[in-house]
Length: 339
Image (cartoon, rainbow, N blue to C red; front, side, top):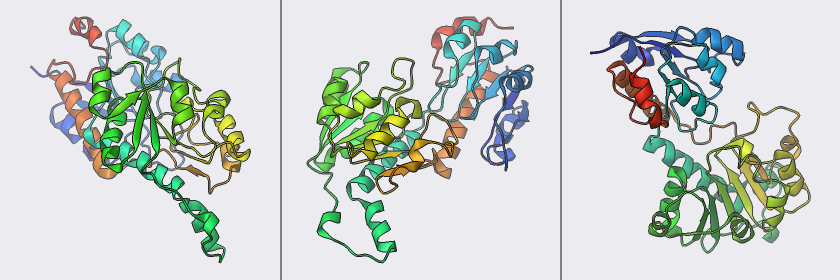
């Protein structure tokens, strides 16, 4: 039997008719603040709580923090689902306590897109594309000292060997690189099958020519790439972050680049988004620091695939079934007992 759900889409990024499969199944859909609205401002926690109060399901955007207070204000809430991978803005512990399931949308398109983006950014840095484009636009031509470098023959260090890290390792396999990774949670047999050597973080930082971040954000790894970590890296190395901005101490990175202690970096994600105009990153040499607005891996095809998976999971909950990608399955027994 299908139960009619009240769904709050806090910040859809596409046309409202994309949510029609929910309406056609008899569910009521409320649209919050579409991401593409000019001048859109984030919800305050009080606004989020008030909007969520009647909801059975929150389809949350990447800008919304779903705190314990928000979920506690919604006594009917059964599911928080995001149309992407990361759920670091959702208090999963509180959700589990309340019997609320939390689900993400881990599509192949998502993993592949982030892996491709990380490789692309690393290549732009190694080939010194920004440096040479700047010189050309100034009316200058090539010099021997402007040449870039190979990726093949280099050591690539993956911080995190989850789905994205594994996708990246598969793609780099034919590139004749040495792959190393730091991930205390991965099965060594999985790493071995990918041709990846597991090492501790200090060894990875000291050895890798390219360090690329693919770790989920936790309280333990927040700021893990700070002054000390950057100091362990080779001055010829480059850093790529397509994971979470809070993994990197941005001020320390800007200093390392300014002092020539790092060859380059590329960031697609930041501790505060949108990136504040007072960020020290904006004062760094733009030929050595690539900054993109958390969209380098985004595509319309990927966005639609992610949304379809999120909607499928909402429809499953409407049928009384747990979502396919519940991140807190231990909450399912309590979830089933909800009125």
